[in-house]
Length: 160
Image (cartoon, rainbow, N blue to C red; front, top):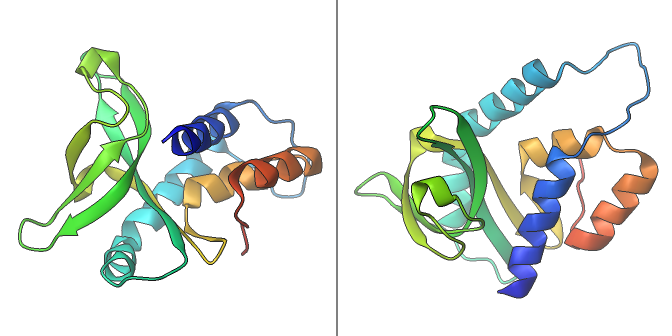
């Protein structure tokens, strides 16, 4: 439990922290790049459903990033893990990875998720990240030192 919570805190901090990037021929536009990551995750959601429908002995994490709309109409994206998929209902079930006090949601609360609320998904299998498009974007923006610290923290690789 504490290890999982620590993992999500690390992912949240790394994904939300400002990163110095080198100027390149193709500058990153955070909004457009993040929207592209969200779109890629949505387009591959059926692949995710297929993968989690089969067991794998070295699968250590299955999670989706869910967009929650807050009372002030702003949104907050939170990773939810221990994901299962209900084929008949077409919905996911999982466990909150963080608190959202304004929605009275806490870490470890069990929730049901509609497909349209998902902005990313990830599987860690055989020590490698599958999916995790927003994580890959955050990783691409990191300095070499930040990448090294990130990989030491999460214990999985981010391969292309």
